[in-house]
Image (cartoon, rainbow over all chains, first blue to last red):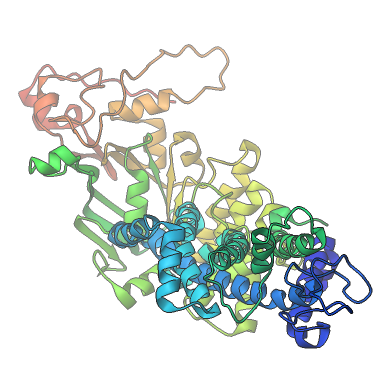
Length: 279
Length: 350
C-alpha cells in the first residue's frame, strides 16, 4: 500500500475507482430522486430538458428524469457489468491462453481451433440473439459479454506465453525438476501479468460499451438504468447535441472509469517489473 | 597432483544417441514418407569422474549442447544409456527423474535470460530448494547464503537485488550458485563464459575450477573455444557431427592433436608469438547437415587427407596412446596396413 501511495498515477487511479465504488454503493442515499422519477414544473407540466439548476444539478432528460440521479444509479451497472464481465473474460482468456501457449502441440491445436470457432461468431448478432433468448437481465448481459470477449484475450495471452515459455529460466526450472504448475505459477504468470491486466482493463471498456449497445437495441435490463442507456436515450430523443448536461456526465464517467483501471494497471506493472522501477 | 587411485565415475554415457524427428512436410506426409531423423547425437561414449572437469569442444551444430542436455535428461535419449553413479537413468520418469534432477544441474550460456527478471537474487537461488521442498525458511536462507559465498558474491548486499542490477559476470555466478544450492554431484556448464567479457571469463572459470575440486563435482564444460578448455579441463573430447572424433587428456589434445579436425581447430587459435610463421590452414565448406550425414568418415568431405577409404568406411574410435582415442583411419594400424595411400599428417603443436 505504501508503494501505491508513492506513485501519483496509481494513487489517482485508485482514487477515481474508489470514488465510483462509493457512488455505486451508496447510490440510493446519494441520489436525490429515483432514476425514473418524473419531474413536474410548478405549472404541472413535464419538466423536460431543464438546464442544470439548484434543484436538478445536472438538469433533466427529455422524459423529465433527473440526470444526476440517473447518473448515480447508472454507475452501479457500469461497475457490475464492467468489472464482473472483465474479470470473467480475463480469467477464461488466461486459462485458455496459458494452457494452449505453455503446453503447445495437440492441446494448443485443439484450444486454438475452439478459439477460431468462437472468433467467427459475429459479435452483435450473437449478443442480440443470445440476450433475447435468455431474457434481458444484467446477469445474462455479463454472460454474453464473457462468451464474446474471451476469445481475443486467449489469443493475445497465448502469444505472450509463447515468448515466455522459451525463456532460459523456464528451461532451467524444468531441468531443476520443477513441475509444470510451478513453472506456470512462478515464471510464466508473473511475466505475463501485465498483458492480462491490460486485457482486463480493455475488457472493462468493451463490456460497458457492449452493455450500452444492447441497451440501445432495447435489450438492456429494463429495470435498471446504466450510463449506456442514458446516452442511448439522449441519442434516440434527438437531444444528443443540445442537452450537454445529459450527455457529458456519462461520457466523462466512462472515460474516467476506464482510465483509472489503466492507471492502476500501469502502476502495477511499474512496481512489479524491476526493470521499470524508479528510485 | 596426480590422483591415484582414480576417483569414481559419476556420469557415464554409453553409445548415447539422441535423434530428433524432423517435421515432415504436408506433401511428404500425404505421400506417406517417413519424417527424417536429425541425428544430433550419434553414439557417444564418455565418462566423467569426481573432481574432474571434462571439456567438450566442437563447432556449432556438432551436438555438444545436445549431449549436455541429454546427460541431464532434458532430452530423453533415443538410444544408448546414461549411467549416474552406476545406475541407469536413461529412461527414468516421475520421482526417480526428479531425484536425478536434484543431483544433476545445468548452467546455460546466456546469463541475461537465464534468470527470471522478476525475482530477487535470493529468490532465484532459493527456488531449487523450494522445488525439491528442502528445509524450512531459515535453513533455505542459510543454504542460499552459503551458495552465494561459494561463488564469491557478498550475500548481505545482493540477496534483495534484481538480476538487472548485476553485471553479466555476477549474473553467471548467480546462475552457478543456483546450480550449487542443491549440492549436486554433476554439473553441465553449457558455454558458461562465451557471452561474458574476456576480462571476467577467467574469474568465472576459476570459480568453476575451485568448485569442482572443493566439492568433488563432476563437470561437463561445453565450449566452442578450444583455447579456454585448456585452462580448467583435465580431459577433453572433440565433437564433430554428433560423434566424438578425438578424446584424451587436455595436455595431449592441446599439444599433440591427432585428428585432422582437432589439428585445424588448434591451428585456428591466434598465436602470441609475434614472428612465428605458421601455415595457414582453413577448413573448406561447412559442417554437413545432421539430416544428411555423409557415408564413411563424417569429416571426409572437409578433410585434406581424405582417401577413398574415408568416404566409404566409417572409422572407429581407436586408442593411440593411454587415454587418447582418435576416430580416424590414419591412426588405425589395420587400415594403414591395407591402404598404403593413407599418410599420417605431422602433428602441429600449438
